[in-house]
Length: 167
Image (cartoon, rainbow, N blue to C red; front, side, top):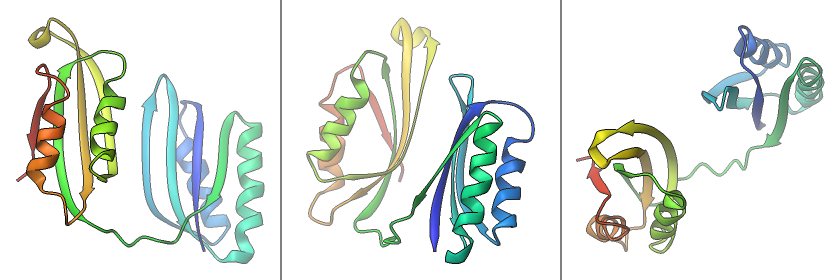
């Protein structure tokens, strides 16, 4: 079976090791992960394959981590890993403002484009005279939607946004 472990806690040395130890103790295999320092917290997710009869071992280990200040939740993975559509990557840069992620996600959803991965950040920058919003995304575009349609939808959000697509 496959499960997703999600962890949030105050960042300190040894957090990734404690997750890895719990997975090994449950005879699991660490398949894929994403970790970051976000808002001063350690935030991450791990896709784990493990024998179904070892799930309770992993859940008990998660409970022990919760007691030490690292909140860990475990959810079953859907098991449906078949991707449908064509991959398209892009970077987006523009003046930051409230609602920009909603605008981008609305434009993509309107074309039935699925977000495979999305990383965002803000930084101070002179290019736009204030805070700059940056996003890097990998999306799955339906066969019936052209890449040009995706480009147009994103560029229509604002004249202040620049979009650079991977070739």
